[in-house]
Image 1 (cartoon, rainbow, N blue to C red):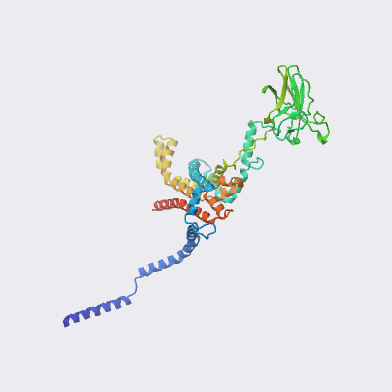
Image 2: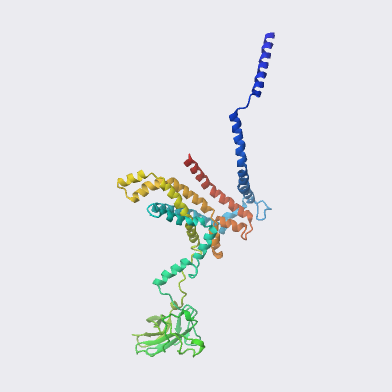
Length: 460
């Protein structure tokens, strides 16, 4: 037993000695280096984590919590704000518009980018062409919105798009020249504002009639207009007359009579009507005179159709309720087409040319090469571009808010603008606004996760 105790004591003594030696032995340099690197990494990452927490994590958590309270933030309403989203017509319209944006804009941009990337490979000045298309990316959405708000103006004198549309229209269609003309009361004509105007009394064949108008500005009279000719009697089977501006310079003259200095109104369409049917049509000459011929004997009402007094064509109402969303999407395409083209062009440059040359040697057409080789090889790049644009489209705000006029703002709203208007643009309901922001976040997150995973797989 003594021997056992002695042996046990020896073992304890040896263990103590080994521990003391290990404590005195210097630490592993590699382990110390790893520890130092970890501490250094934490020092560098900590500011970024603090900023991330302050600018991203905290607002997200606060918005989720705020969405569970009422507009004042005093009463807990649970999911009441989320239920209100499903019953608010304006919010449902914003969701519909956001869906249109997500479906249309990324598809168009990806298609345009692919087409332009392929075409620029065959252009001699490809670099300059790409630079011009990419320049809108340097313009802020605020500036782009102001530019397109002016371009979409309804007035052709201000909106460049409508100026072009009206120019093309007027080249093929003659618009009425007298939208402001009106009859002088008590001078033998009757009719409401804007026409049609008719003679109060019928005119018998062989007779004549004078049709005087006022309200036509001097600069609205065609340049070829001549001094009005007094109405002369027509042949037995016709009716003669004159359409003129019943206002002489300086206000001289007698109302209802053609006076010196008064001009004819050329181009006016005049009709001879009998029993409710148009028997003949004539057009006023440069001096305003007109003549019907080949009429059956009898009495006729002389009528000037409303088309003579209709407002001139003013172009397309780009910012009206029907077209405001497509118009804003057009502005978005202008800004982002260069981005899609450059990214797809980079992917196109990485395609092995051997496959393309082999296909050409085998007799494949350019269309077949594009469909069966280029597009499949570009599929990863196209997917990344498409998903990136989907994320960006879901957050679009500036263009919609700036381009859409106030009366049609609700027709153009997307989730981001609806969220802002509900919270700060007069609604003052930050509970509902926070719920909208949470919904928007939930819609964006899956696309972001998908994009990040694709980037990681391509990096691996």
